[in-house]
Picture 1 (tube, rainbow, N blue to C red):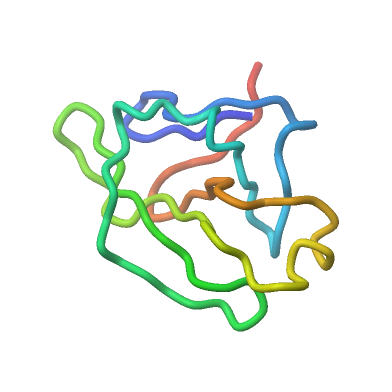
Picture 2: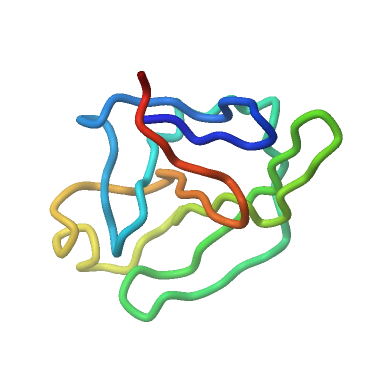
Length: 102
């Protein structure tokens, strides 16, 4: 699977490495191309997962603000609900497409 922004692959991992939570694919932190990611001050809270941190994703001068998010410290019990430790796994939205690799 690939995450694509502005025609550039910003993350890539095998389906076995990904975790699916509430319809979103989460990529292992080591699968993102860090040159495209910048920490954001944005935070949101999911009542059963915890506080999400965000990245802005920039490719060729085009930025997807808050385009990626992750949970640095999931709430106690949420990892058990998901069935796999998703700490620091990265999910995408705000125009970033997640597609199958060919």
